[in-house]
Amino acid sequence: MASPTSLPWVIGRYQLFGEIASGGMATVHYGRMTGPAGFARTVAIKRLHPQFAKAPEFVAMFIDEARLAARILHPNVVSTLDIVTRDDETLLVMDYVQGVTLAHLLREAGTTRLPPAIAVAIVLGALDGLHAAHEARTEGGAPLGVVHRDVSPQNIIVGADGVARVADFGIAKAAGRLQTTHDGQVKGKTAYMAPEQIRGRDVDRRTDVYAAAVVLWEALAGRRLFTGDSPAAVMNAVLEKPVPTVSEARRELPAELDAVVSKGLCRDPGGRFATAREMAVALETAIRPASTRDVGDWVATAASGVLDTRARRVADMEASGDRSMVAVGAAGDVPVTHGEPEQSTTTASLVSDAVDRHRGRGRLALAGGLALVAVVGVAAAFLVLGRRPQVAGNAGAAAPTAASAPAPLESSAVAPTAAPAVSVTTVPAPSASTPSIQKTGPRTPVVGPRPQPLNCNPPYVIDAKGSRHWKNGC
Image (cartoon, rainbow, N blue to C red):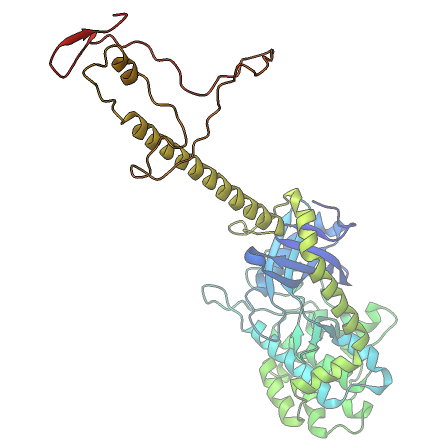
């Protein structure tokens, strides 16, 4: 496998390019998925950091994320396409989204803050994606009981198409996960954790509803809800600090919106919305959200610099992808994947196939030509040998000589009426005036009429009157 320090590098049918983003456990790269008949698709490839790729606990968590996310099929969830493992590498292949995180949009907006309709539309999309995750089932139809546990602005991607998508189910809780949280172990970002999550108690879908309410509060207010000098101080604020209404931070917001956000932020799970969909319905009733078209236009303006840069990188990657695959793919790197090995067709193999086909046609043409020459030669021989000499009564000894010696092979020897004319070139015998040239090595045979052995079976000929005449030399 090529070194990751010299990108792009290839594993199986995937190519890794530069970084999109990097987190605590993994880095997300631009990638290309290739296949037969020139198929190619831009993807995002998540790669564990080297220090975690060798730790069985983190690899198990990574594989769990892929298995879990693959069961959630919804437009508001980043799709997981494949997982590839080889040696000390574990790669998670996902849909590439041309967009930015909500965290980036909040930083770009700064004190100007997101328009309320835009903020609500983004959180509505996240709530729909979360509800799909909460409703996910196993292949046998049993509920998975998924809880994301890490809902935050960093894990909500807003595309230039105006669609918000939930990403990163790396620490999600679900039935059947190989990797489970130990007692007393807390996972997630402290500022978005529900009180029961901080206390290490059981969590359910209402835990994600709480985190989504925190995200909505911050998107509307334009600042953080819970802050502190340390993680412990932030946790204490989540558990004890009075929660201001969002209208206190932004006066123009309607009271109905205050009520929705406050219910989602209830510290008691029983006082919150029972499902993410229930909160989404209440939110749509409180304020009219922006359309996906309006959200996409706003994102394209607010994050134009980042989106333009990424678009150029994707274009460069796609332009160089085929060349890189031919150069690097020659190493024969094959991934260890679930299921049957992937069949990939590169430009090099297509060229090789074309050459083989060309050579095959050439060999076929040569064989056909040789066969034609052989057929013509046999036909000419039969035509020449088929001309029987006429035996005259007074021929005497000359008759057997004419009968036994074939006619010279000349261009006019074959009558046009007997068969199609075939031109056969003869080499004339050297004349007396031709100087003799001594040559070393094997002698060149002379082409032309050759003397034939005397035929003495029978040793006589019979003329027209029935008389026998003995052949000379028999």
